[in-house]
Amino acid sequence: MEARITMVSLGVRDLGKATAFYETVLGWEKTMASNESISFFRLNGILLGLYGWEPLAGDAGVPSEGVGFRGVALAYNTRSKEEVDYVFRELEGKGATIVKAPEEVFWGGYSGYFSDPDGHLWEVAWNPHLQLDEQGNVKS
Image (cartoon, rainbow, N blue to C red; front, side, top):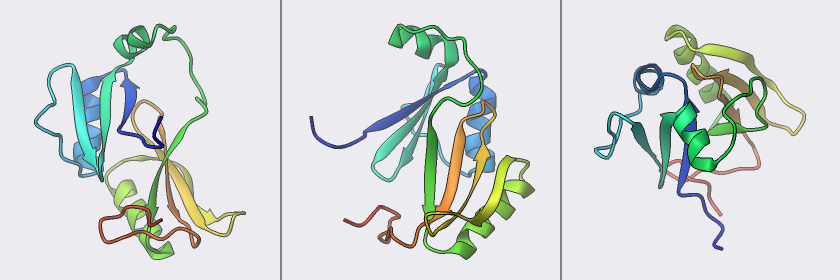
């Protein structure tokens, strides 16, 4: 198996509300492949799919119950500490739920967390050990 991810799928309780969050708060654009059952967003070579919570659990053959920390956080890395603060100011101004304000972290970077309407955690981080290219992809 090749080392790659082509899509991240998030189960959501209300597809319309979740889609509006990613479009309005984050400013991302749905792809043409989106329909009434799923919303796709193109992210630097991979897709983010928003799919109904129950149908996604059913597709995987697992129970849909469960709350709290799910053992997963998605990350958006920036090119500077200042960009982390900028992103958080934008998120706060648009009503996003800030879980942890940006701060210096033990691994030498600077990061904070917000959540989407379904509690999916997103880290916004500046990592001095990680360089991004012009498109925002991780450099080798």
